[in-house]
Length: 250
Image 1 (spheres, rainbow, N blue to C red):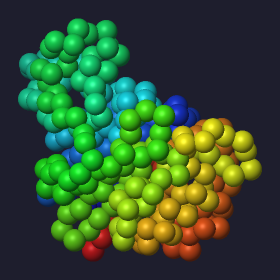
Image 2 (spheres, rainbow, N blue to C red; image 1 turned 120 degrees about the horizontal axis):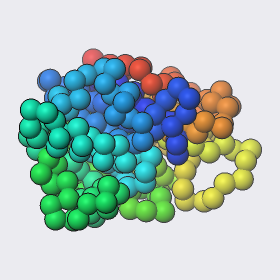
Image 3 (tube, one colour; image 1 turned 120 degrees about the vertical axis):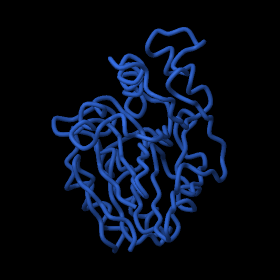
Image 4 (cartoon, helix red, strand yellow; image 1 turned 180 degrees about the vertical axis):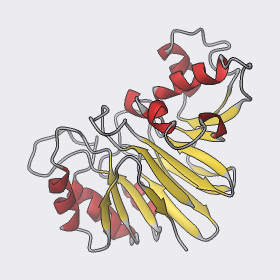
């Protein structure tokens, strides 16, 4: 598996990165994990955007899903005709949510180019990937995901506060892509996001082999977040940056 960081900025795009979007590839199949605002523009630096095979949306906050609206325009109104439908996996109400965001009636909404599948906790197959999803701790319905292929594994937190189900999803993974939007020395709402030390603790409990911190809010000092995570996780840790490519497993 190969992971490309398209966007890693938390809550809103930063000066150097769109909001959350990650491309996972295996056997020629391309899966986007989230499609936050600004992601579609950056995605064009790396691939033909019509070569995406599926999209997974962890939850329906704007910084994780709103560029699906722009992608609908690109697929629906291509000069050579609408592009074939691709699957989109997301929480309950995903089809209506993105249609409403663009001012469309629910029927047909965006279903002419997207085949929507509502997530429930459990196992599913997405192209060549064996996946498992579960609820995580966020103010709206939100999912974490574990993906495996060819003996390699990764987990992606989406947005979450402290959450045992996320530890289970990330157990013994080669790469744990985990949000760290908050910092320990600042006051913040509960049950919304993780601090760096909390992300590190989740990785430690999960015995993840590598931790990659993401959802990095532009007003934070990322080096502080990295230091916090290093205080609770002894393994390799990195900061997700737009354009990075990570080989998983092997």
